[in-house]
Length: 565
Image 1 (cartoon, rainbow, N blue to C red):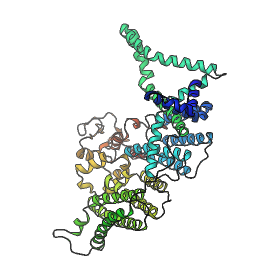
Image 2: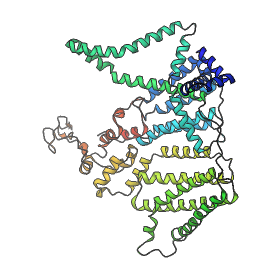
Image 3: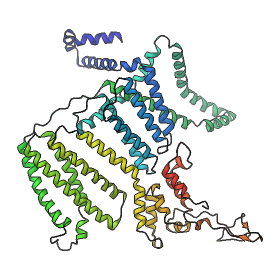
């Protein structure tokens, strides 16, 4: 290592540069790679010198990740893992001399809110998206702590996140290099021998597997012993846990190291070189078109005046064109941001962009009104609910875009991150499945239920909708009649020695005179079928809930199962 570092230092001098110019292309490439590795190793020195601390921190993260999330994507331990991850981030920053910046505590608080919201819902799609959201929040936290990101825009931040994760994956060998360096130091002889012993055991594992298979085929008694041992040890479980531990350790160590290597350039290029006159002509034409369209929306849709085309009613007119308007509103957002990024500052351009933003608000209002009228007739669905949520969020984001038109130093990314985070946390905590269930049940008549109604309630909504479904007080016979996937269990009770509906029981209660008292058939008890509903939505990991995988939404479903069920 010393010779390579010395050669790199020589390469940085003028004589070294002249010598490097005479090298072949492959040799020059190798020299540049050595220079990069040398610079990277130099920046990683704080972690290398304090390897026990960062290795212990990474091990703590790995243990928390494995214990909390092993076959448990939505249990009560989820917020515990998020808290452990936040603690690891704070401790790593302090050890590396990075005090907490303004805004970092908001990111940690948002992560905790998402963690708590995860164990409150049984909407598995939202739970999966929560994991992705937490990864993005963690990346933003790391970049914000180790970079001067005041001048970064949205494009810069997204590219920085991608580059940060990509470069972290390239540091997978660094923990092992630091481990070898630490073991080579004086005073670590015992630990070095323990690590070598462990490596020997790991290398022996594949050889042992081959030998076990061969010896098992050679002797039946040994084969039975192996099968019994496998039932106890569960190799797949051990491999799964081992993979999670290794992934958690490497992820924490490499992501921390990537903060020191600083693969992202802090500088942001100024692309505002376009001619304002061209933007005035382009955006002015669009603005005139929007003015005409918005005048029609105000006159016909909002005020209800004017004469519609033949064959149209105001209801049918209002319920069409929603998605087109939403697409145009999103396109306007992109166009305005594009002009701000590539066109030289101009007051006339700013005025036209402000006009476009104002017209976009009218389009959003038109789209919301159309969607509300549509929902009034056809009720809420997951897509319609999330679309209304998205339009509300888009309206707030558009306010930030309008503000940055006149105040270029406004931190649009931070504003957008805060808005999106708050809105998404609100969506998770609101539990869309429960909202949809109550909205659908409110319009139903129990005597006129159809197969489509029951299919939607039981199979297309999440377990969050259970309180609304239970409010209908459906019996097992009603559900069986309308849903072919549910079958009434053969557990009904008859009088002693007699048959009831073709089913007989040995356990009948008697009154004081010895007369058999008929118990109520479980299929006639309202919501007794909720046990089947629970198993349908809980999944294999939550059939039996304990302290580690407790989920509040699924626990609410269990509480709705009557005692007689």
